[in-house]
Length: 284
Image (cartoon, rainbow, N blue to C red):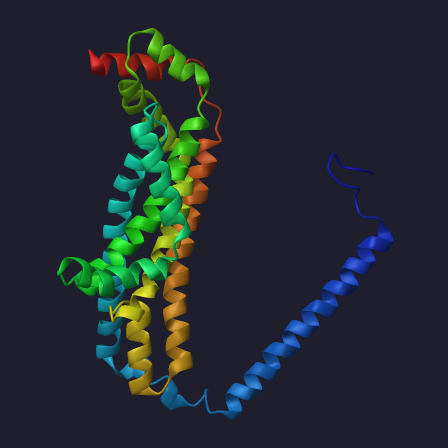
């Protein structure tokens, strides 16, 4: 029996898959046992490593403040990067070379520059160049904005190009200018298409806020390092910090999956015509 894309595994193949799966599982279990024994030998399972989580309310208050700082930097960067991404995407899709070429240059430059270098520039280079000292928060936010704005611009451009060409032709045929077509017809639909990708980029942006520790910004990772040095439970605090990141990013990933599943539903007939008609009504 065969499938369209592959041959269904026969009895011998299924047996080999089962054997190697058991072997792989045994190896993983053995590695976990060895790691647990090493941790036990180093005293990582002693009670004093875990009592701060139950007896130190200040620890959780500090984690909450650090988490708030992480989410604050991510929120500022997301808003600014989205605005920048829209402007760059529209500029790159413009028919004017005076807008398109500079937009392409900015996008390609900031996509190619390491994010850490941008953060260092705003924290160390910006004061030397302009005489303005930026707080660590805004040095981190501006670095995230430029890098993620360039990425979001490409996401938006892909969303617009994924729309049927008839959308643009119909809008132009009924008298809308290219700017009105972009604002009222293409971008609103493109945002719906690219929303899962934008949420996925938000996951990347949120994780990248951890780079703020290199400039002294006390976000979640930085606070975890400081607290671990004082409480001497680096592994335990690292696990807690990682668990917080995993919960937040997994929630965002689930949201992106849910939105993507909704986008896969078949559009009702006449949807594209209604989009253009509504745009004309708004312009009128």
